[in-house]
Length: 154
Picture 1 (cartoon, rainbow, N blue to C red):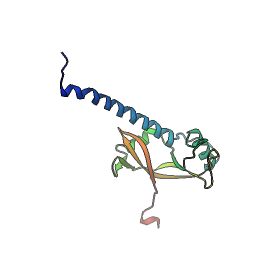
Picture 2: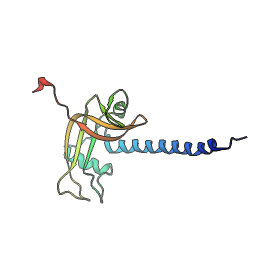
Picture 3: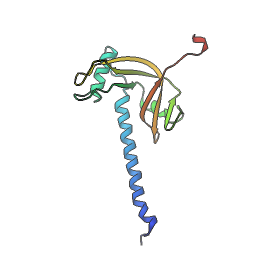
Picture 4: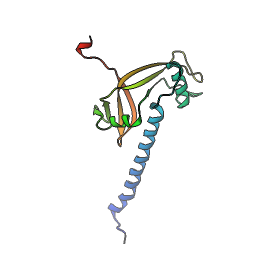
């Protein structure tokens, strides 16, 4: 016979909560991939055209809204996922800073550009990243960390 009482009444809501958290985490990971990962990098003649194309292609620039700033990371997803483990160092909360530097394209909305005609400035660089992780997967790109040389680079 099934157990009845306070303990059994908590079991179903707990199972539903765990299932909901797993789905939410998976959705956040897929959103991260859409917004921030382009590997291999889409070939476009220059960074400006790249940004305008990718922002539209990824639905970050629509007829109603232009996302102001977005970074695309140009490495295999497994390298970014590694930052959530041995490839990154904990900073604050669920944020981790990568040990490795990654090739990036930073897309910034041009001043005076409005939906539906979103125009972007693009810059490329190689920098470390700070990401938020859930369940071993990246779910948010917080920022880039410029690579400054040591005392010998002055």
